[in-house]
Image 1 (tube, rainbow, N blue to C red):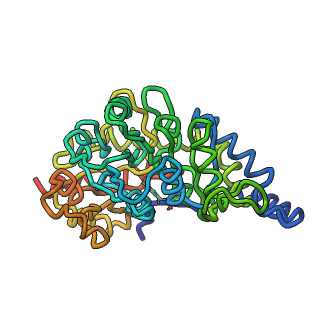
Image 2 (cartoon, rainbow, N blue to C red):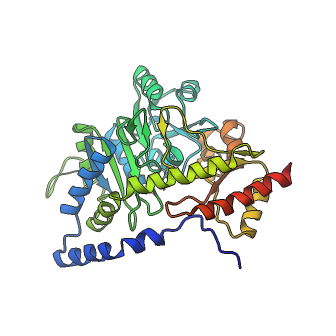
Image 3 (cartoon, rainbow, N blue to C red):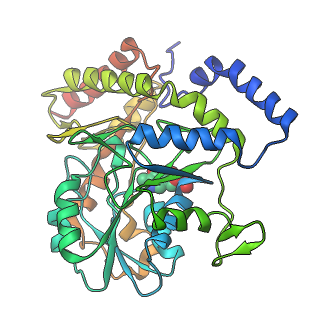
Length: 372
Ligand SMILES: Cc1ncc(COP(=O)(O)O)c(C=O)c1O
């Protein structure tokens, strides 16, 4: 019997924290402090410190974090926002929710992130903002993006949903743009025990507006500055996130060590392109994504060996039925379209063992030999 290698194992970290989580639940039930309160405030200040940001506002999920941040930054109907096509759909959805229009741009084929060059080449008519996504755990190259945005008068929202703890020239994701949005979906490097998200950024009126928007546009108990939403981080999620935040540096370090094992063992294997870490960036490997020729054949080989795998993302956003009206059909973004056919995510989670990495690598190497 072959022992399966899962793509992701959420049970191990949760078993380790089960006692502390149960104590947190018991306390919540006893105090009935379900919304707001100490856990939310403590987590918001701890996570802001972790990101090197002035402030953090907890919200209900990462998609809300994105669209509430964009709205606080003044984005609305008629505006165009540049977003990568190679990302999870939420990046573009946040723009659409506001009645604004996402315009899709290319990513760098080795780092999977948007570049200032790609943004400069895009049609910039009516563009008001750009959302660089720190995809798979590596920050977009923010300095040239911020310089271009300043020149053009665009605001910059980081989509940091996959990059808790990643840095760009020594500064952490969440402190690089005008605002940043995080997801704490359970599979993320820092995951809640349900849905949760956060907005981080500099203290000031924009962030205060975001806080109001997330809580019914509230000024006082029954006084409302503008129509808002109900998107609060609940106290049980904040309690769980606070417990997990203490482990995040170690968990990220373990992801980096696993990536180094993959890099070393897959170096020079023909037909396999391993992820590139940009100079000045530190990667936190939310996902370990390679590019391979004949992906389907490798997927079948991995299945036969009971090794988990995934494809992030196989259908770029400009080719999704949801964005059929974007006017950017097949051929519009050739780099994105090519990598979407070749990317394959290998197992990546902090508890993955060296012998499990070796098993994955053996299957990938055999695939490469069979193809040569
Ligand atoms: C890049 C990216 N942006 C946004 C989101 C949306 O986050 P959520 O699922 O918490 O709404 C996700 C995660 O799912 C993501 O991966």
